[in-house]
Length: 350
Ligand SMILES: Nc1ncnc2c1ncn2[C@@H]1O[C@H](COP(=O)(O)OP(=O)(O)O)[C@@H](O)[C@H]1O
Ligand SMILES: [Mg+2]
Image (cartoon, rainbow, N blue to C red):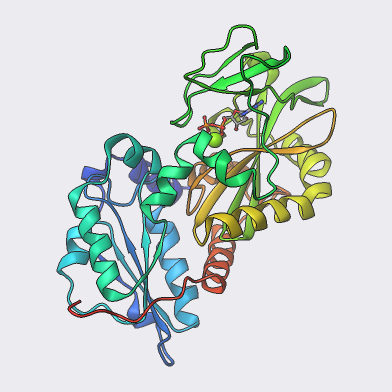
C-alpha cells in the first residue's frame, strides 16, 4: 500500500475527536448557473463516521461531480456549524450522516432535532431521515419494509415451524457474534433466519460468500465480493474476513456476480424505490444449491473504504472493482442527482 493510502487509512481509523470537524464549502467548483445546494450534516458525537463516509476521499470527488451539474456541495461534520451558518443557498437538500444503529440505541440528540427543524424551515429535502435510520437499524423492521417490496430475504424461523438450520444474529447491531443451531433451540429475542448455505469452492477450498451491493437510491453503483474460508467455521462474512486473493475473487465474481448482474440491479432498484433516496450498502447472500440471492440487511454507506483499503494491493486487477475510487464516487453523485428529493418552498424565518 502506498504511503498516502496508509496515512488515509490511519487518519480515518482515528476516533472522531482527532479528525477534522471543519466545515467545507465547495461552491468555488461551480462555473455555470447554480441549480441548488446539497448540504451534508454530521452528528455532534461522531462528526462524519469513517465506516459510513470517508470524508477526505468521498467529498472532493462528489462535490466536483455535483458542481458540474450546478449543485453546490457544503459539508458540516459538526452540526453546530450548520446551525450557525446563515447563508444556506436554496433550493437545498440536506443529507444526514449518522450511524443508524447508534440513533436507535441512544436516541436523537437535541442538536440532531435542531438540524431537522432548520431543514423544515428551509423547505429542504432530507436524505436519511431518522425514521428511515430507525427502520434499517432493526433487522425485523427492515423486513417489514423490504418483503412487501418483493425482496427475497432469508425466511424468519419461529418456534412452531419445521426443523431447519438457523442463522441467529442480533436484531440491532453490526458485526456481532452469530450462532448456528437447529430450530429446536431458538432464542426469540434474536434475529433468527434460515441458514443459507453460501459455500462455494475454489481450488479445493471452501468459502462462505457474501455480496455487498453499493447503491444510491435505486441505482447500483458497485458490487463487492466478500468471502470467508469455511475452515474458520463461521458463516458470517465481512470485509475483514475476505482473502486478499485476486484469483479467488475473480473466480467468484465470474461464477456468482457476473451472471446475476441484472438481478442485483433489480434488487437495488426495488429497495431504493421502497426506502427512498439515500446511500446504501445491501448485504446479499447467494445460496449455493438454488443459485438464489437473499438480502440479509441494508445500512447507510457512502463508500466502502474498508473493502477498498483491504484490496488495495490488488487494485486494477479485480473484476468487481474498476480500480479507481473516483469512478464509483462519480457514479454515486450522478445517481444521487438523478433521484434527488424535491425541496418544498422555504418557510420563514430560515
Ligand atoms: N440467513 C443467513 N444464512 C447464512 N449467512 C447469513 C445469513 N444472514 C447473514 N449471513 C451472513 O452473515 C453476515 C452478517 O449478517 P448481516 O445480516 O449482514 O448482519 P451484520 O453485518 O449486521 O452482522 C452476512 O454478510 C452474511 O455473510
Ligand atoms: Mg452486514
